[in-house]
Length: 127
Image 1 (tube, rainbow, N blue to C red):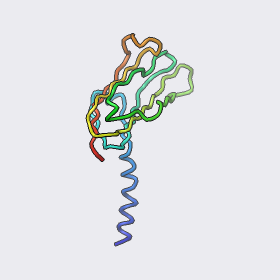
Image 2 (cartoon, rainbow, N blue to C red; image 1 turned 90 degrees about the vertical axis):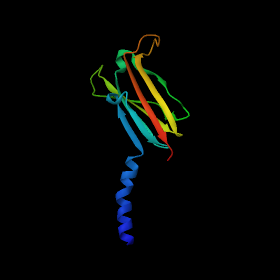
Image 3 (cartoon, rainbow, N blue to C red; image 1 turned 180 degrees about the vertical axis):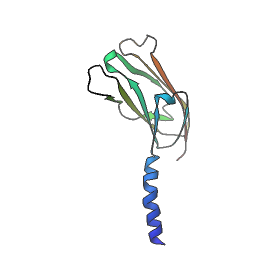
Image 4 (tube, one colour; image 1 turned 90 degrees about the horizontal axis):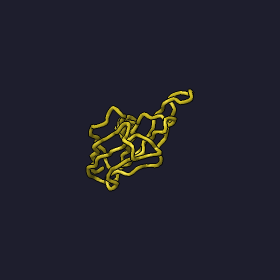
């Protein structure tokens, strides 16, 4: 009986760890994401730093989710001027609902219209 419990624990641990982080991509814009308190929302968005554009604004309720660290940027390849991917992380801190809105545009003039936008509805439930 004890060995069965141990086997179940070994099988369940990776599954529980995999649920700790929820990944969404640009194609998921406009959708709804469900998180548990303490869970991490990882967002993958396309971009190209050589164009002068950046994911420049983010609006959300910081009583529900909080930004975790700084965004990471990874180039798609080694060519000069190549596009890449931005990674943003948010932690679900309390039960509630928030809209997460981000825009991609000139990092030098935030009054210019955005080139792209990204929006999610985030629903956080107790853990």
